[in-house]
Image (cartoon, rainbow, N blue to C red; front, top):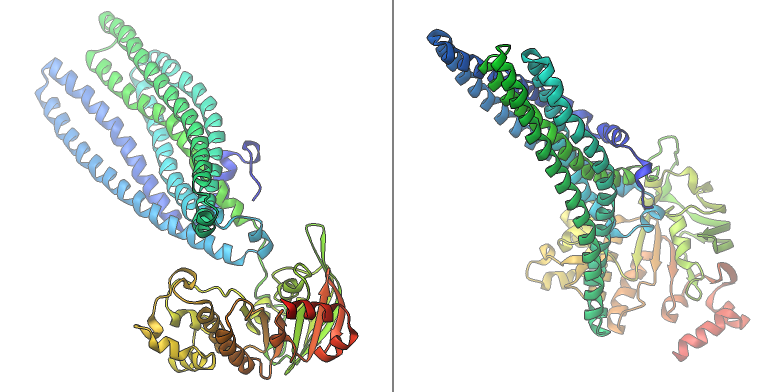
Length: 584
């Protein structure tokens, strides 16, 4: 994702965008806001009772003194109940709303177009999903409630202070409110910019750490330990430098508020003491005013620090929102219908072109793949072989030309229906963390145990599974790390058997296997390919020679096509590549 800058979003814009994802929690927001209003009212009531108690003691009014003390006890009890309920409510809301935004985000990520995902490092997406969403949601909830509570308390307390003495209130506002507000506005923009930099640096750190762990064998093979450690330290130093600047601004803002508060109290006791001496203000009002001023200046001070914290939450929220606006696939467009995609009898590529980042990948590719036949795609690396598979599954959209399924352009077939009709076996199959059973069942989540066992038998993996300690419930680790290449491949083939799709895409399924594993897999693939439309990318002669049609691609162009014997007799590109392969 492109880096955003401070000018691209405002606080209100980010808050409004994020609000849309929290509509279901509005009753909880209203309930907690009501508790905050109650706490603010009780704070004013406490100050007024304090004034009455001091005046009652000064005037030796026993009845007023007892009444005021009893009321104050009730106020303290209510204050405890309200604050306890508010704290519990905020914590529950934080968890519920965070889980909600994360569920929306993972749902969004799984629907985003492949080209959008390819443009970003996977760790950056994971960071936004887990870290940014949590910091944004919980941070915005907490800081917004704090901000609302502080503003309400300031309004209530300033109203009460004005009731006690308008002139004293005006002077204390200038010293305790105006100066901190000017500092807050300067510090907020400064810190927002630095919070953005911190988020980007942390994302880069996570991406680098992930690459280092996943490529650990390469790091060790090339003795890169010191070099990689040095590069990671530079990320740490970069983040630390930015954090230092943020801490300095936060500390400066905090100290300036303390300075303003002290001088505000000096003004209150100086001018207020003069008022008491003149008899225009009683001692109870002065004490109540000083206590109320503290109750007002504290939220004023908190607003500045809360506002700065809100910028950090907004910085995280922006990273979440950047994900939410990425283009999605229209997976199940109800306006598109096809009679029977699984009964497809042929796939037709007609003058298909495709370019990626101004580079021509496919140029006028045309061929027909029929049911019950095998079409092999061969050619040098970078000739566009895998791209043919990608655009058939609509991971990428072709530039021009047509691909037909049952005489219907694939654009008129709902994407979910199209992909349900396709099974894929790759050279390096992706297995998920979990059990063997789970990984096979992804082919058909509703499959019975008998169907899964039968798929494993068809893929020549059943006997191996039964030899493991926990059989089908054996945990295979991250990406099947506990399995050999041949074992992972056969689990992938079992998944394809279970899916039972009419179209089969094989992307060099035996390229990196030993002869024994290749024999087992070749045997299972022959069963899998029966009565299906099979497209296979391969280099091995054993895989290619029995294909019904061979397409030789070079620089995205179909140079030759025909059976193995026909292409060999042409003594062209295919023949040359086979000679090189045999020599190798």
